[in-house]
Amino acid sequence: MQQVLFTIPLFKNSFPPDGIPMYGFGAMLFVCFIAVTVWGSRRAKKTANMPPERYQDLVIWLFVSGIVGARVLYMIQYSHHFPDQSIAGLAGAFFKIWEGGIIFYGSALGGVLGYGLFYHFILRRLDVSGWRLADSVAPLLALGLAIGRIGCYLNGCCWGQVACEECRTVPLGAAHFPLLPAHARPLLVRDEHLQTTTGFTLEPRQRSNVLEDPRAVVAKVETGSPAAKAGIKPGDRVIGVDGEPNYIVIDLGGAEEKVQPAAKALEEKGARVVTGPGGKPRALFDSHEKYKDARFSVPDGVGLDFHVRDYLEVLANEWPRGRSALTLTVERGAEKPETMRFAPTTVGLYPTQLYETVSMGLLILLLLAYYPYRRHDGQLMVLLMVGYSAHRFINESLRIEPTIGGGLTLSQWGSVVIFVAAVGIEIYLRRTMPTPPEPLPPPKEPVTPAAAMPAVTIAVPGTTEAKTGA
Image (cartoon, rainbow, N blue to C red):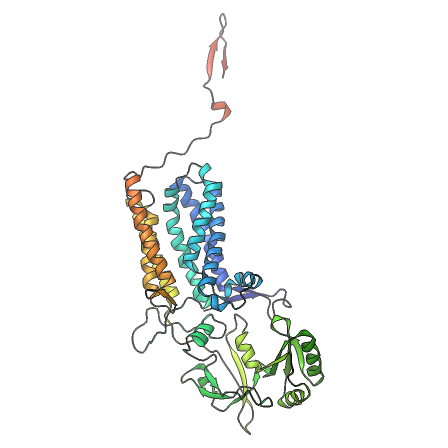
C-alpha cells in the first residue's frame, strides 16, 4: 500500500510538511483514464466506425458520471461514516474520495445515466450502432476495473476478511496495510473490534478525576505486533509523539461567549491555543503541572464543555494520510525516557483488490478472443456483465461488508441484478439482431469538387483542338 506516491515541493504552507501529495488512488484513476482513452479511440474507430474525437467526448461523460454515481452509492451504503448529514457537510465529504471511496455498481449506474445523456445529445446524430459500440467498450471497462483496483490496494480500501496464513495458503499472500492512515482503521478498530489502533491498549482514564494525568499509559501490547517488536511494554506512559510532547489537549465547546474567555484564560496559564475541529479553540499543555493549575483556575461551567485527552489520541483520530510510521517517547518509572519508532499495521487481510485485478485481466483476454466468434452485436457486453457479476459475487464473500437482506451484501445483490439483466439482454438481442453480425460498411471516401462530375472532351469542328470541361 502506498497512499502517497510522491509529493511536489510546492505550496508547503497549504500542504504541510512536504508539499502537494500525489495519491496512489488518484494516480491510478488518471492512468485508467489515459489507457481507456488511447486504446478506446482506436478500438471504437475500428469496430464501430465512431470518430475518435466523439469517443473521447463519451469517455469524459462516462468518467464524470461514473465517479459521481460511485461516490453517491458509497455515501449511501456507509452513511454512518459521515456524521455531518447537513447539505454542506455531505457536499464537502463528497469530494474526499481519497478517504475511501467509491463503489463500482454506483459507477455503472452513473455511467448508464451519462451514456443516456450522451446518446440523446450527440450519439443519435451519428451513424454509430449502440450495440457495436458496447462491444467496443466492453474490454475497456474490464481494463478500467483492473487498474482501478490497484488504486484501491494503494489506498488501503476494499480489502477482504482476516486471513490466517498459518491456517491455510492465501492466494497472492495476505495484505498488511499501514493501520493509522488506512481506510481499515475505523472499520477494523471501531466497527469490527478486530485490533487496536496502534498495537496496544491503554489503561482506562478516570473521567471523574479532572486532575488525573490523561496522557496514555500502555495496558497490554499485541503479541508479535510492530509495537511489541519496537519495545513498547505495559506500564509505559507516552510522553512524546513524533518529536512533539504528548500534549494534554482540551477541546473547548459550548456557547461562544463562554468558549473564548475560557480559551484566553487557559492561554494565560501556559497553554498553546490553536484552532481545532469546527473552528473551536484547542488548548495544548506540555506538562501535567500546567494542566492542573489551569483546571483549578478555569473550571467547567454552564454553557462550557471541556473534552480532555492527549495528543496521541488526537493524532490517531486525525492521522495525516500518507504517513505510516509512529515515533513514541515513553517513560518507565525512574528509568530514562526511551524513544522508539514503528509502523502499526493491520492484521493479515485477503487482498481482494488484487484478486479483481487478476480476474479482470483474464476477462479482457476472454473478451478479445471471443470477439470474432460473437453471434450478434452486443454479445461482448453481455459476456462482460456475466463474467464480472459472477466474479464480484464470489469476491464479495471474502470481504467485510454489511448485509442488507437474505444474507447478501449490497454489491452481491447488484451482481444478481447485473446477471439477470445480462440474460435478458442476450435473449432480446438473439431475437432482434442478425446472426452473425453484419460486417462494417466501408468508410465513405470524401468527395472533392474536382471529382464531383466526370470530365467531358469536346471536339471543335474545323480544328484539331479539343476543349475539356467539367
